[in-house]
Length: 143
Image (cartoon, rainbow, N blue to C red; front, side):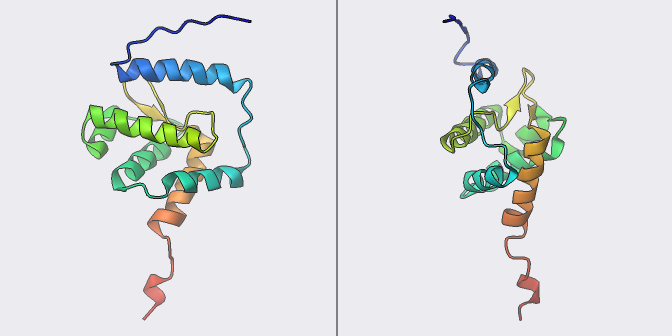
């Protein structure tokens, strides 16, 4: 058995995310996360269900930036404030874990820039296109 001590300031979102990332890395060795793209797709659909425009745009911005990072300033322009970003990010991560996922959906660095795994980002963008942007591709064909 090993003992690990993680010290962080709970008032600083960056510290919280860094501590969460350490815990995520420690749990990944034992994690049995689905990697099947169809399973991930269904989990992403479930995650996005009911999200409003700001959360959806935040997720889209980060996914579009993959394999790079979405700049903190760009995210603030979408969400509105640094405090709101922290709450939004935290809520998304909690919802992702509630879907049985142990990996991080969106990672943030010390500067507040956000990134997503490129393979996950591809699926996210596909779901956003199919379910949010064009949920019914035939409305213009209806009279």
